[in-house]
Length: 295
Image (cartoon, rainbow, N blue to C red):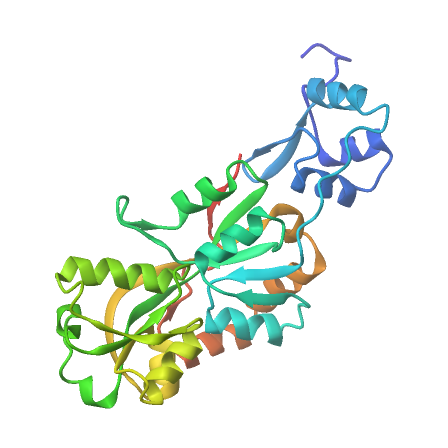
């Protein structure tokens, strides 16, 4: 670059000075996808030529900013997440009705965050294909919340009898709703074990991890898909099936807002780590790792 020439890329501070706004406003514009930017090694850079074109196109006020999503955590129920949202004083509301429901609510702007654990058999991995299909190039980031021990919650009489998924044949099981990751996984495991059609499903659905465990504990069914943490809490038998990855999909604008920031700060505390150990079945070694950042 010759002396005196304008830099090809501007920093956040330089863009803020150019726009005569605070740097926080620039971060908000970038998170909402409303200003041209690039993320390089975790740092935001702004192409000067694209910024000039963006400014020229916004001299008349520009397009109306996109509406911000509701300040709600939707998707799959996770006991540790549910507890942390309340204990942190985050101010986030919750509406847990299954992984796929959470993605649908994010599509419609009805939620800013969704938890999910959808097994993708073709890849032998979790969540990414469903997120990309549902949200496309929407300004979201997917981060790992935790790895969890998923399995079968078993009534006392089955604890020593059911040693594989195939042993569920002839027994009454609580079914999860169609949008739940745990239900989708159980359907896959039952088909893989060759006992599809041989399992007796209870009429009533369990819509959360707590409801599934409570149904077995109350004798409404002999087994249910669920977490090791819930088996410990309700004193149930447990047959591990897979270690799953539970991710959070977060709208980029919501990431920088106080409610989610309060939750993030709390998750760095010793109280959070201690609660995960108390619940059991959680691996936090990848907590906060960015799994996917929408382009």
